[in-house]
Amino acid sequence: MGEVRLINKFHDEKWTKHRAVTDIAWSPKHNDLIVASYSMNEENSTDPDGVVLLWSLQNTLERPEYRFTCQSPVTSAFFSPFSPTLVVGGTYSGQIVLWDLRAKSTPVQQTPLSSVGHTHPVYCMDVVGTTNAHSLVSASTDGKVCVWSLDNLYQPQEVLELHNKASKVVTAAAPVAVTAMSFPNAEVNEFYAGSEEGVIYQCFRHGAKSGVNERYEGHLGPITGTSFHPSSGPINFSHLFLSSSTDWSAKLWNSKTSTKSLYSFEDATDYIYDVEWCPTHPAVFATADGTGSLDLWNLNEEVDVPTIKTAVSSHALSKLVWSVDGKKIITGDSRGYLHLYDVGENTTTRSDEWQRFEDTIQKMTVAQNEAAPTQDSLIQ
Image (cartoon, rainbow, N blue to C red; front, side, top):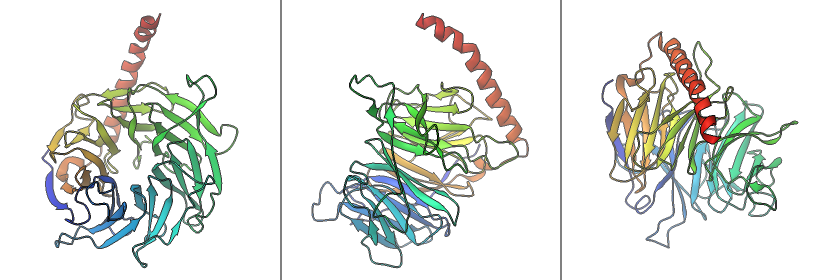
């Protein structure tokens, strides 16, 4: 495994100073364009609370291509996959806002701040479906999941309330405080919601199973990220997902076989704020943590420690995102800097990587099954 190389940093003295990066996403159409959202400026009360900047990776002038603003701090942001000029933002107030690159810096559409939509922070959103039939799915920390048409944000098309059925609150099932959300590859009904209490819930939008089903337990702190395997190769790994947490660990899960984690990665010495599979190499993923370290893991080489640790920043790394070709990673930190890295040969995929990864998962499964009885006997 070779080193990763810093290509560039992006920050803006006026708009990113005293703000933390809250989300980053690549453009689905222009592979040199990224969007980043930022927390509110603690030092300057005259600036808008909500700021989203579009950066061109080709631009060496150290200034963003576009700037979007809104009234509430932006907690999540991405380009609409089917309308690349639209940027979708989720906010701390619960409002969902839509900006258009062809329009001015203020939103062209926003959800009403009323009980029909979200009134709690929206940390996670996803667009699911196809070009001709797609929806925006958003989740807030009060357990409400809304489904929207991007043509009309006035009212959600569907509303689902997620309740923790095994809650210790006696009165009623407590709402699930959703902090991370992922849909398995090509799935529109089933999704997985990571929560403040450290549990990941398997949920369904419709049908007999609608709402919360399985509980994936093992983390001891809030879930900060979830990532389903992209599974674009000869063997299907779409049932595998990763999670990260403030309990200093990342975990690997097999959604088909067990609600206990398949493996726990515990090399970190601080909160892990994000985790994401490489889109091209079946066994590679990355984590970003509170010490400012970006870690690359290749499970075909080593499972206990990262194959590469990179000290990116003296501040916590809050988010990371891979480029579509798996050759670059952008990570953002708590002082508003974006760091663009070339991961070099580390994601070069040999023809046997898929089979090797299947063998790795098989070994983990055997070890998990052997460990299970001892845990049961401890409980007794």
